[in-house]
Image (tube, rainbow, N blue to C red; front, top):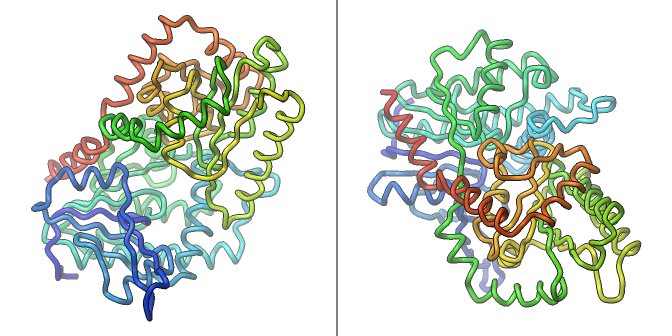
Amino acid sequence: MASTHHAEVLVASNRGPVSYEVRPDGADGSLHAKRGGGGLVSGLSAIGPDAGALWVCSALSDGDREAVRRGVGEPGVHMLDIPADVHADAYNGIANSVLWFVHHMLYQTPLEPVFDAEFRRQWASYETYNRAFAEALAEDAAQGAAVVVQDYHLTLVPGMLRELRPDLRIGHFSHTPWAPPEYFRMLPDDIAGQILRGMLGADRLGFLTRRWADAFTACCTEFAGGLGDTRIGVHGLGADADFLRERSHEADVEERMVALRAEIGEGRRAIVRVDRTELSKNIVRGLLAYRQLLVDHPEWRERVVHVAFAYPSRQDLAVYREYMAQVQRLADEINAEYGTPGWTPVLLHLKDDFARSLAAYRLADVALVNPIRDGMNLVAKEVPLVSDEGCVLVLSREAGAFEELGEDAIAVNPYDVVGTADALHRALTMPTGERAERTKRLTAAATALPPARWFLDQLDALRRLG
């Protein structure tokens, strides 16, 4: 397929840098654009406006689809109007309900997964969805352009794009863990092979940690006869220090700090967690560990508060709605059992509020990051960076961030509630000097590869393969 456009650098991802909302303020309703942030946005900005860059993404909402239909768009963005039912099958049915569960090892195997005819129907949509991206990239890319494909939603794109445009330099980056062979083989053999062949269509594959890269390599060795000519790289995405430090001192954050301090109470310590209510984040066991702390160390009652921000995630999936309800129930139980008129043990907030999250970061004495399994977990990097007085990081050894931060964190087995409670006690009693030194080293490690550099390093490595 010949190129009809001239983009020299292309990024492909399910979610793009802009979204649209239809507002009923005219005959047909006006479209309002909302810009996103994150590492990819920073990375594309860093290469400059003259680099010929293009972001290919999917229309996710009715507003996005209306924008495509009206021909409304942002410079440097190609939004694909993939049919809503195809996108739902690919995104919720396969990416979030199968691939996410495999890579995070979340299945309750006596009952799930069940790879039946409905799975095969949804897999066909996943293929269609990936093919739409591959064809758009093939059409938009200049001769010899660099294409960086993002994440588990688009594992088939590199192989499909390679067939259409063998001249391109194709990279793929995985923001999740990669399952070890003994778990990956749970997938039907033909599907597992299709995913690996799709990924191996890339010239270069990027992962957040060496552990995830090694797991992918092991899967290829066992199921695909090796990596072939595909190169592997590790790029541990870091926190955006300049942005976070500046944003965390703006007026809305200061206002929320006043409110949070009042909720916590004068002189009390704060154990902070900020997560999406995602099954892999292990929020329930974190609450159980906090309750165990109050049982094992009653001296902390009325002296510490667990500030738990658990923001909605994938609420169109029943299992996520049930998990959020369980988080709420457990927080209520702890407050009913241990709370006093002047002390609420758990401050649970379920509505997303970035300014309030930053306020909690600044007030944190202890940051609890205990995922079952996580590609990286940027919260582990952000809290020490933003905390006003320095904080102790209690970190799951199953978080990707553990590879970089583990030496200066208190490590926990995410399944061990008693062990996590003990880690929280150690964190709360850590001497001020040690806490300050650990925070300093955590901050240095957390900012070693800021988002713009993270993206440019991948792009440079891809271009050097020529």
